[in-house]
Amino acid sequence: MRLFERLTAADQHTTLLFNRINHLRLPARLFAIVSRLGDGVLWYSIILALPFVHGAGAALVSLQMIAVGLSSYLLYRWLKRATGRVRPCQRLEGDILHSVAPLDEFSFPSGHTMHAVAFTIILVAYYPVWAVFVIPFTVLVALSRMVLGLHYPSDVIAGALIGSTTAILSLLLTTPH
Image 1 (cartoon, one colour):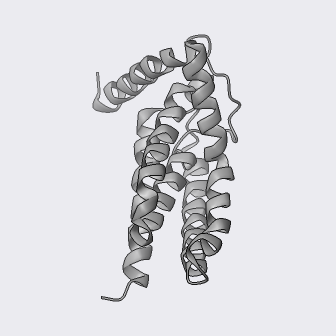
Image 2 (cartoon, helix red, strand yellow):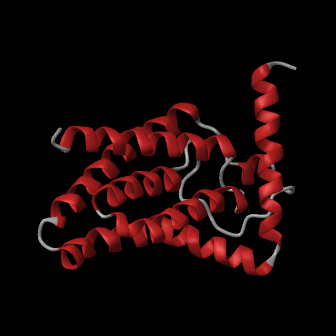
């Protein structure tokens, strides 16, 4: 078996393991709620609230989060179309229990994870007090994508890498040295 085929098999197997959690009522509801909040609802609320919570200077942090979100989104859309990777809930239909509808057709990379990681890095870089809230939420968002059968682990890892890269580059470009 070639390396790519072994990695694909491992990705599918791991997704099926994570998806077992979706068969339990309470965790399934929790991950569905986290996923919904990760659609943008929570992040948009934080972006809008920052200047009210931390003062007018926080508007620049909000703008940086928006800029990183948009630039990440453009890369994400291109990758989705270029790879055309079918979601686990479609490829493994019958084996995957999915209770949340996907926002788009393709799986690679995870946009929820990408944005959660990017926004968390920027927010915590400026306001470390937020870490106790947003880091656990970001971890739950990443897990929710696999538990709900919407993404493979490699999709989530790629999303995290893209999000962290765009956020760190943004901080390097905007932070005085």
